[in-house]
Amino acid sequence: MTKDGKMWSNFWGAIGSDGYYARSRDYIAIVQNQRKGVWNVPHISATYLIQKQVLSEMKGIFTGDKFDPDMTMCKNLREKGIFMYATNLNEFGRLLETDNYRTKMLHNDLWEIFDNKKDWEEKYIHENYSQNFNLSVQFAQPCPDVFWFPIVTETFAKHLVEEMENFGDWSGGKHEDKRLSGGYENVPTDDIHMNQINFEREWLHFLKQYIVPVNGRIFPGYHSEGRAIMNFVVKYDPNRQYYLRPHHDSSTYTINMALSKPGIDYGGGGCRFIRYNCQVTETRIGWSFMHPGRLTHYHEGLPVTWGKRYIMVSFIDP
Image 1 (cartoon, rainbow, N blue to C red):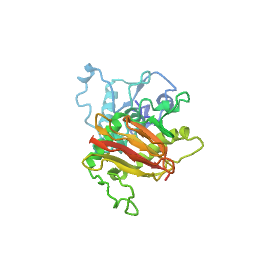
Image 2 (tube, rainbow, N blue to C red; image 1 turned 180 degrees about the horizontal axis):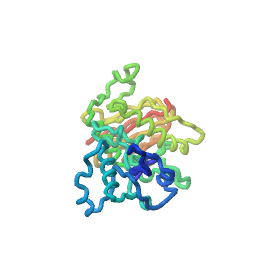
Image 3 (cartoon, rainbow, N blue to C red; image 1 turned 90 degrees about the horizontal axis):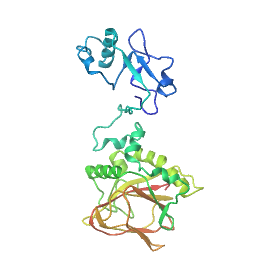
Image 4 (cartoon, rainbow, N blue to C red; image 1 turned 90 degrees about the vertical axis):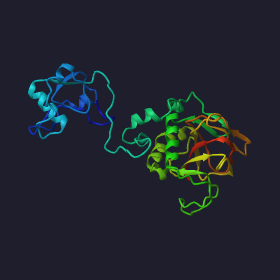
C-alpha cells in the first residue's frame, strides 16, 4: 500500500547495516506499478495480513530491541526465518498522510484537501462533477447567464453546515462588521466567514482546483486566478435574517452553492434576478450557481418562511 502520489509505501526493499531503510534498485518501479508481482521483503509496516498460526510463534515479537514496534517485529521475524511478502497484483487501498491531520474540528476530513486529495475528492466532490467538462452536455441555465452545475456531495454540505453551527458565531446581519477592513457592510448577511473556522486556505485551493476549470468553460476567454476575499456561509432563518434586499455582488462572478434542501430543510427562499424577472427556488444541495457579479445580475434573497436555509457564497475576482 502507498500514499497517493508519493513514493512512501508500507514496505522496504532493502535494509542497511544499521537496521534502517535502504533503497533497493527496483523499489520505485514496484511502487509505481511498473513491475507487478510478489516479493519477499525484509520490512513491512502500517498494515499487513498475518496467518493465524504464525501468531503463536510471535510471543515477544515487538520487544527486545531499540527500534520502533514495526522494525522490531520485522527484525525478529527475519531472525526466525518467517518470510514477509509485498504484492502489487491487487489494489488494497491507500495509506493516509496523517502528520498534519487536525483533531480538534467536528469534521476533520474537510481539511484534508491537500494531504489526502484522492480520499477528499471521493468523499466531498459530486459524483457527476466530471460531466461539467463533457462538451456534449449543456449547463442548465434557470435564468439568463445563471449557470447551474454539480460540485460537492451532500456529505460536504452537511459537514460544512455542522462546522459553522458548531462554531456558532453568526454575524447577525448587521451593517457594522469588524471582520471587514472598513468595518462596514452595505448589504449584510447573517454569516460566518471561512477564515473564522480556519478554512480559508483550503477553500481558496478548492476554488482554483474545482471552480476555475468550470469558469473556463462557462465564460470562455476569461481567465480567472480564483482570487476571492469574501468567502462565507449564509444562514436564512425566519427568527433571524430571513431575506436579503436587492444588491450587486463585489465580484466579477459569484458562486452560490446550496447547502440545504428546499421543502425539507426550509420553506420559501431562493434567489430572484430582478433585471430578468427570473427566480430560482428549487435548488439542489451540492449544486452551485455561477453568475456575473456586477451590472447585469442585480438580485435578492427571497424570504424563508420556515426552517433554515444555508448557502456557501464566494465573490470571485473582486
